[in-house]
Image 1 (cartoon, rainbow, N blue to C red):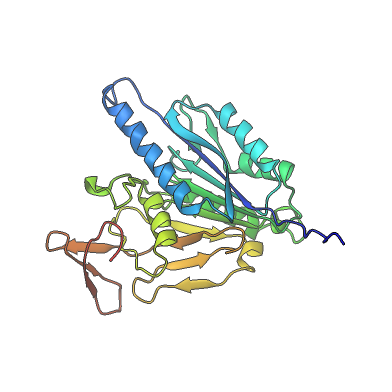
Image 2 (image 1 turned 180 degrees about the vertical axis):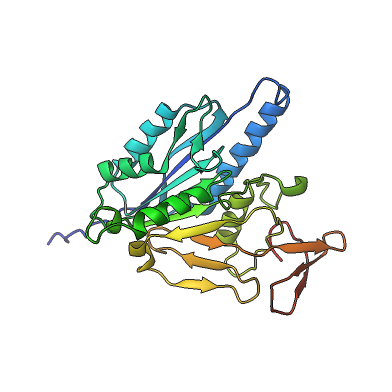
Length: 290
C-alpha cells in the first residue's frame, strides 16, 4: 500500500534589500569598492546565520549606489506573493529624519504604509502568518512610532488590528544607525552594529552580548496580535528586553537595548551602569560578546 504523504510545512522567506547614496564629493573612487565589499560581507554573514532548514533566502539585492524605489517595490511585491510560513524583510541603507522612511535620494522614499499595503495585497490581513521587518538605517525607530499609532488606535476587527508584525529598528527615531563603531570590526567581519548583534544572538545563544555604543539603541515593537504569540524576556545582567519569535518558522530574536557598556582598561574590561543597581563589571573583548 502506498504510504500517504504528509503535507510539507512551508519555510520562512527572507528578502534582503539595501542601498547607499553618494555625492561625487563624498567618497573617493577607492572608498566605494571598499564600502561595497563591507556591505556584501554583512549580508553574507546574515545569510549564514539565518538561512537554513527553517528559513529560505528569497532574494538578495546587495546594497548598491543609487538604487531605485521601483526596483525595491517590485521585489517586495513579488516577495509577498510567495507562499511561506513567515516573511522577513531586511533593509540596510539610509533613513530619513522624522519619518524613518527608506531614502533613495532625490526626495524619493519607501514608507511603512507602502510596505503594509503590499502586505495586504500579497498575503492579506486576516492571516496568522508573521511579518518581521528589520530596518537597519538611521531614524528607523520612527517606523515603530508609526506602527504603534496605527495599531493602538484602530477599531477592533479592522485590518490593522489583525496585523501580526514584529519590527526591529536599528535605533531610536532621533538617532543614527552606525557602522563600525570606532572603526572596530567583530569576529565575523561585520560592520553594521545591528546586524552584528542579530548574528551574534543567533550564533551564540548562551553568551551575553555587550553593546558598547551609547549613541544608538536598537528597539523593537510587536503588534498586539504578534505579542500574543510570544513571551517577553529580560536579561538579568544587562536589562536588555528581548523576544524569541516563532522558533519553528521565524528563528529570530528582536531586542530593545536601553543601556550601554563603557569599555575601560584598553578594551579588556567593561562596566554597565543601570540606575538603582550595582555596576556590572566584566572582562574580555567588547566588540561583540563577553
